[in-house]
Image (cartoon, rainbow, N blue to C red; front, top):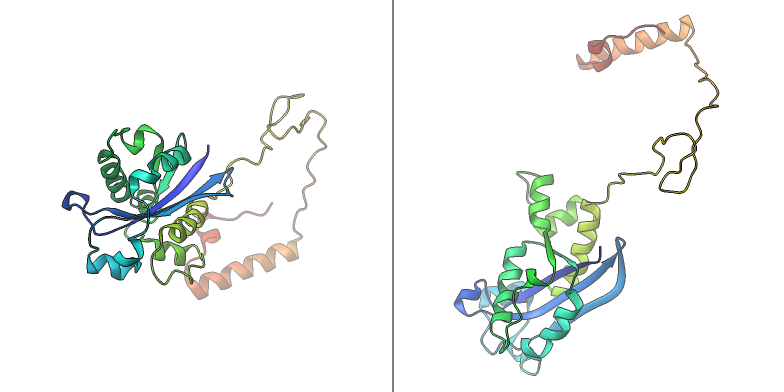
Length: 238
């Protein structure tokens, strides 16, 4: 599925208090790779920016005076995300603002979820790492993702970083295409596996000297750590 990683910057924390979106950044993932396609726009909010928000993203009211309104870019943004799965960190925050902006349009087209599905990476991170800090900076540190260029928040930069975090969180390989199939059938990778004429396994058994050395090594581990899993489970000479 085509995925779009989205981030926004705003004038404040609550759309219900009249705060607006001032930047949208979105990058496209296709087959778990950045496609090079992106959407980015600064927006004129037609209102002041709270000091707390300014400290986070550094985008000033003066910088935004000549930027387009949300209504000017809404159609292009919806076209870019249509039919994709959105990947958003703390999705209720961004969706709340985007849905509010859509509701202010003269012909409201609906809500973001009417156009695409949504995956919240904050919820995913909380499932994978319960009880730990799961903001974007903490996840970058946990997954060894370089975010040194992230002095201030920026929607496009944060979307690109979040794309790396999302890929790291979901990067486990689940199917190598080598599972056994009935004789004469093919795996998903196109390989034909025939195990009717497989040669017998060659088993190399330890010599008595090797077995005794192994037992001494386990005893030394038990003495040093007082916890040798192999001895606790029991070992037998084969």
